[in-house]
Image (cartoon, rainbow, N blue to C red; front, side, top):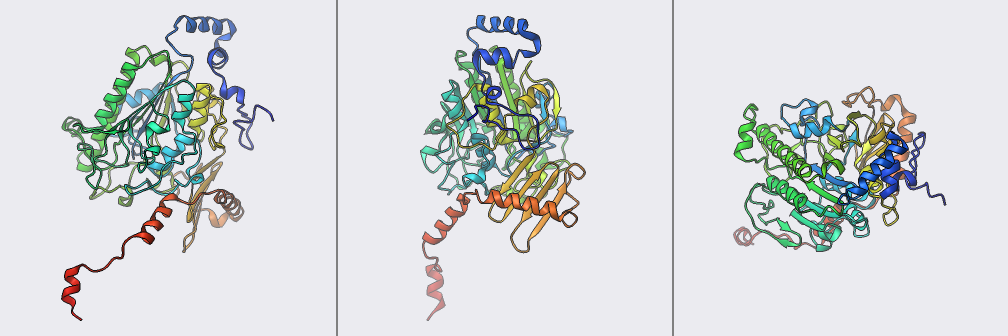
Length: 502
């Protein structure tokens, strides 16, 4: 079998991404992948400089930052009234991903990042893992931090996990992180660090921790601590997963005051949470610069899904009135497969390696796994078959995206898929609804073209049916059935039974 089959180009494209392109590491990566534009003599001179700086690993440091439920428009560079100068600088100096897709909700997106595989393949496609959930990211998957750790990286996580909490086997330290600081669940009070039922959810490594402070400030502080203590003989993978601006809408007073120009109280709190994130990102970048690591560090930033515009998807905290997130021109938000729920703010920044640009080709969060594997020099094989494609040529050379299809999600009762500019949203529950959109002309998804294009509808339905044949049952549904079948008999309370008489 050919060795150039790890990252095949999608049908109809000419950008074939080979094993050689994707898996170069060490000397080969330094000379041929990154130094090619300056010619052989320049590459050799650059390589000599790398050798002289023995403390710098040949593999890049990777800092991966995720915000939680942030609207597409809620960054300064998309025209928001919320100021995000640190995020904006990363965007201005890097690749702004303007057709970047995540899953409709939190757990599925994090699972897609960790595996390079669509969540419908292992049962995490529906909703999020609830507090009572007994399941987690499948233990036979080869998660991103474990892959990078095996490639020689020091791995650290600060923030929200939400990929399994019922067994320690699901926890971050057991999935490849050398250190973990933060919360296991999906939603906590940002000051008390307690879940909706009042249970504390705050850990360092595998031990519960009790300490005061606003969670997102603490996450940033921990990330800076990791950078400051890092032994630069090894590359660093730092995963910084904020809980903001997810409900409950809470922020320290100084950040509320900073956003006093916003009249609506909920949006002011929401904006203040994003200001916290932006400040902490600035401190992380400053720490990298002070330690001389910035030039060899790839920084990725994205939201985990679209902003919340429907209270059903806001979490367990009580919310009142109009929800504050802004997804710009895109339809609906978190929890849906419309663009507002899945097209997210995203950027990739690496000084000298990625030129400032707006990248308009399709990319999906599953693409990060093979892209980071290639940069780390990982020879793939322990992982299961990937849905992701190595996007390094797109990011570093401005080549067209090889991705021609996006699978938004596949569930037993609904699915959505995009081929080229045509997108099918299929809700199979009765009454059935089929919607076909041409995103090149209708990114707001207002004109349903299904009746005018029956052949395309049939083609995309066939594709969804094919994918559904590969689908694992949603684990949350299996848990729900177990709870219903094995729960105690529900009877009236004793006082009611006494008073009703014979």
